[in-house]
Length: 368
Image 1: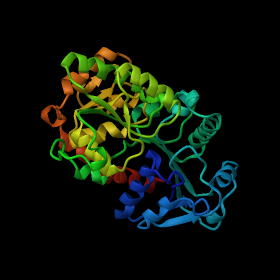
Image 2: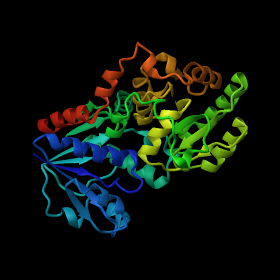
Image 3: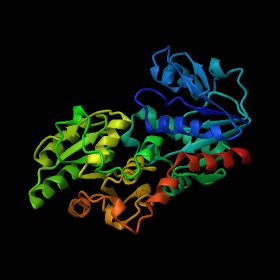
Image 4: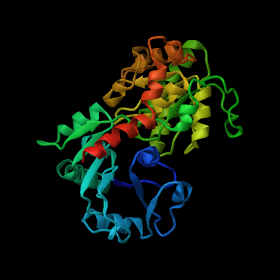
């Protein structure tokens, strides 16, 4: 079997879609599948693909913006014109510039359809266009959660054959299983951090940062603490407005770290007083799973797909209820989920592995 995976999301820093592409391709190596990834070097500006030399690559060197625009209107890129694949796998809302015998798509969320105001006009337009194309043209569509499947079906009268395959965490996270509190020293660049509440994700309206800042301020007063709010993520849409509001509610500035490496992220999980995932909408939500497997105290907003990955009601809070979040923080502060005997952590480790994900995708590839 020959498989081509769309790796155009791969560029520095690696986004969630890019991480999915790389991990899936590596996990498929155990099967009788000849897997290639389509990368764009963008006239050699994309240096990230040099770090992925272990993967079989088909590389296009054209300007990515121009090439992607042509692909949206059905024109093959030069790198793929003579490359006939049995199965082409589209991994996000974009047209793969190749004619394949069979086509599969993975849809991680339908946020651009549910909340187009959170995106630029161009991104929203092409996401909607490609969503309907994938739902009508693909031989199989895979969703990352039952919630995303239900939302997608609400937009379509008819749907292709579909499956739900939850995502997985990286091997580095797997190797850090149950390591919370066992690595006491943060990297030197984080030595200035005292006790902190951690948020992993970009600074944007969907991530609900101001309510976390307000809750930490209340908790600090209630318990006579001085917890900081540490955000591991880039400053995106309306970030300055969000950070100003958060500073006012917290009583001091949040500490925004920007993009960090995976090793740095793991160290932050291992030493946090609590990890909070307060997002208003997620198609899946990898950070809560990462925190859980490491053993970091974890609190998760109870909405959308996050309901599917919260293993205990003790970890949940109502999304827009600040006092409910304060109480959830107090319940879980410094308390590893490994202490909750109602949670089968070994099952979660096995379930959120790329071995399981690859097995499920392989069955779909074989059925096409």
